[in-house]
Length: 200
Image: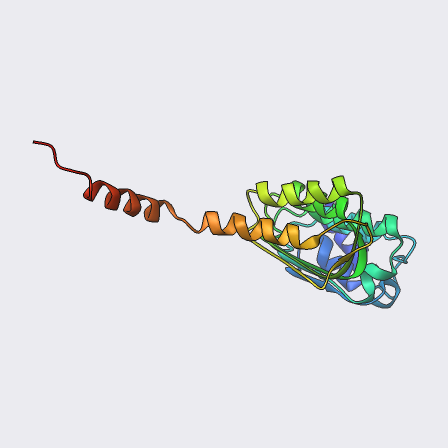
């Protein structure tokens, strides 16, 4: 059944075939979907074929969605694809999102649902959402058990009163705590013991 699906997909578009048949590790899309998936039924208002390929994939480790790709999708389609990669890619280790308006709730979903994601890079995004959405995103980053690297560059928010530096500062404080390894803690304890007064 799987091989038959792969054959059908290969007739529609090579990239879709690669995704569905686990023949791709790095997925980079930087142009409008209609320019990337020429000859398929993927369009800015209908990305269901792409989503179906993604939810079947087990090989993608790195994703880069930049340029016109996310920016030219409708908001609901943008949410669908960000949430899909967070929910259905078991091998995803790194993702970079840029150059588009993005709902903070979608980033929160990505961080909290992906169990394999280690590196999250976002740049030149217009982050949208309520103050509660931003707090939830900050919390999901702080309590993520998988993410090891987070970088946010040249991002802005269209929500009044939101300080994006707070998210970065919280992440940096978390990393500062994590840099104290168990070995360092053990050595520190030994030093403290070595200066304890001797008893008779």
